[in-house]
Image 1 (cartoon, rainbow, N blue to C red):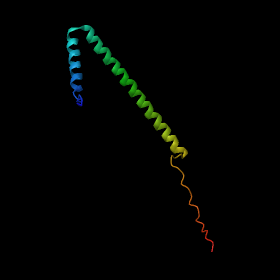
Image 2: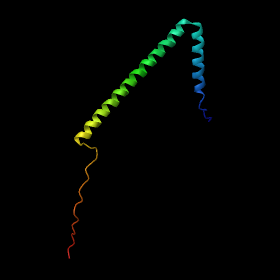
Image 3: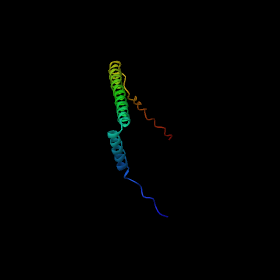
Image 4: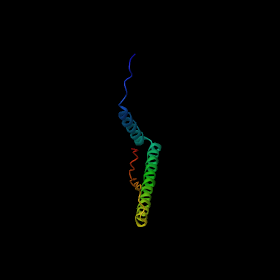
Length: 90
């Protein structure tokens, strides 16, 4: 039974697709419009993600300083050592 060789050259397919889109962009105004729309969507997604990351950082900073003031710690209390009882019967 022959084993199928794994195709690791997918990056070239992506590069060729981008090249074809750029060539179509030189010829067709609709393709240029599509490329700009995808770029605008990518910029919006990055902006939303960045805003969320900044907001999360502020939230963590505020809650961290409040935790420090109240003395809360995320350390488990250690169990006290129980006295050892010798139970030998003579």
